[in-house]
Image 1: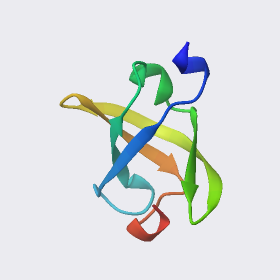
Image 2: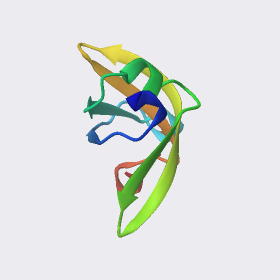
Image 3: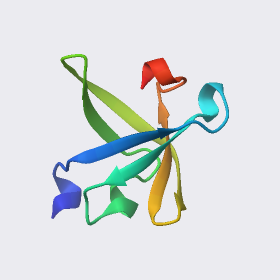
Image 4: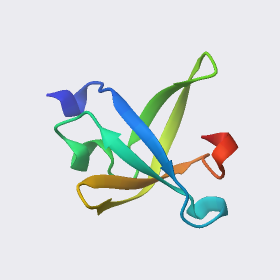
Length: 79
């Protein structure tokens, strides 16, 4: 299943809070958002020519989109 493999994910920043409380609104291209964005899940993103591993620290749904916290994303510059 896709949940066990990789998926393309589009991220849109939505700053809510500060420090470790900043969260990201996800425009997901996956059929399994509950599995993909569960706290503890790992996401791999390409940034500045390298692949970074991010860990989901929190997750909730706002409208139809997941809103997640990510370890290592503490401000706009880190995203």
